Every structure is written in structure tokens, then in C-alpha cells.
Length: 83
Image 1 (cartoon, one colour):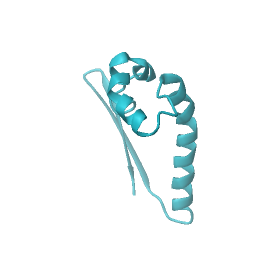
Image 2: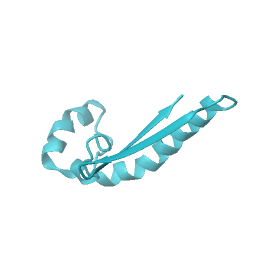
Image 3: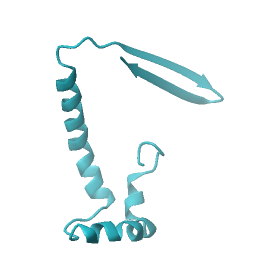
Image 4: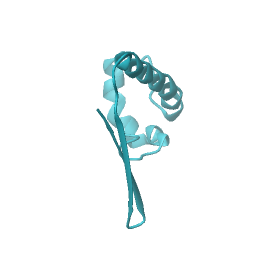
């Protein structure tokens, strides 16, 4: 949701969002909080884990990367294809 829809992390602190996720937190015993600070702290570690998983999965394999970009109506678009 954050990267796909370009929403800021402080969305997690919104009272409406907290009402939506409260049942999920209670279902998991409520031993944690979902807020901008906690999510911001978890993103670098999760990104590191994903990079390592990709790196280990592609080790010793031939990889081709195609990058293309375009600008239209004052909007820049970058596309990547991994084969």
C-alpha cells in the first residue's frame, strides 16, 4: 500500500486506519503496535532480507535486465524487466 499507492508512512497513525487494523492486532494478542515509527524501522531490514533472497536465488544464473523510460504529459515512467 505504501509504495504502490504512494501513501506516506504517517497514514499508519491515522485514527481511521487504527480502527481498521485494531481487530487484527487483537487477534494476534495485541503485543505490538502498527504505527509510522515501527513500520519505518522495519522497512530497511525487510528490504535487506528480500535483496539477500533474490541474490541467493540468482547466484550462478544468467540474468538479463532491460530498463526503459518515457516521459509523457509531465509524468516520468520507468519500466524494468528481469529475465
